[in-house]
Length: 347
Ligand code: KG4
Ligand code: ZN
Image 1: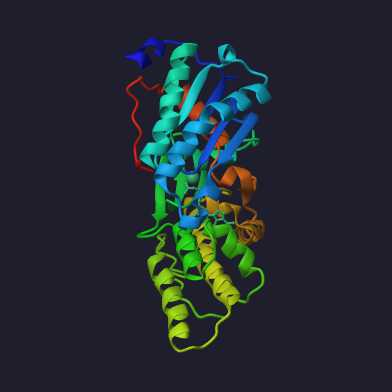
Image 2: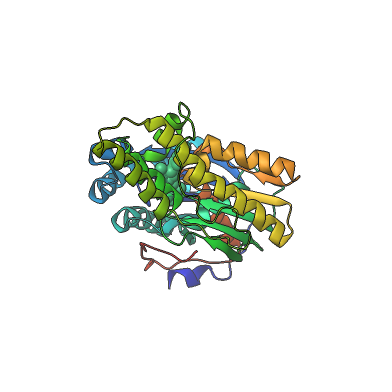
């Protein structure tokens, strides 16, 4: 087994790790030192190729990854001023994501690790989003509460240690990012929906009455977004069928408030429940300015220290895979050359 070769290697505190990410429509490579310091962070996106289809087309994404993966990797190594020989490990996202897309990164990382004769570290994309908050934050250490809000996941977690998590609450149906994307379609906004809803919401008022599921319920830490999405569909279709005009900006603004306020509320409640004064957040939806502001305000009032990754580290990137890859590297969690891609992984 390839991983067995490295089971007794000396783990370096300041390990230099090349990370590769290709789970969706972003091909990314990054060199991260000691799990916290970003030496380079390169990204190429096929997003514009998916716009006319209203969502990511897996086959187009896979082909784009194939064309981009060596370019972004070479650029990441060059920018970091690091050669393949100077790397201590290669980390790669093996799941969750689109299988064909993941396989491009996984295959490329395997070949590079084998050629460089260094360990291959399998990284969960979800854990990568949580680990993004360690980047450039040398003082952040568990325990803390983590809010994960992406296109595939929505959860509030108690991060007990670098590798132990307890889910306090999670979505019972759609992820919050997924709800943003679906509501964007209803409002005839282009993919990706999240940033477009945020932009439109700035010009509207939260005047549309929408359900606020589990908000105010201090004993329930879960989320549900399918009812909210349906309420938006019913509202807009109802108006259209009656020939009554409505303000798309007001709908966007009302939806954004309903979808995000509950995330802030449950995160703060979880900090109280676990008696911790540190909160971190990650995932594409954390790039949302309204959510960031609300979290900052709520944490400031309660003297909670808040760690928010800069926006480009909230959406998909490889630096976060390097941060989580480093944690797995220190635990000697190495993969064999039989590492496979997985469409879904456990939180
Ligand atoms: O974390 P991410 O890049 O990919 C996944 O792992 O899912 O998250 C993508 C999700 C999409 O649903 C996108 O619409 C949402 O994050 N998103 C946003 C914003 N930027 C990205 N949602 C709300 N506001 C934003 N500014
Ligand atoms: Zn992601």
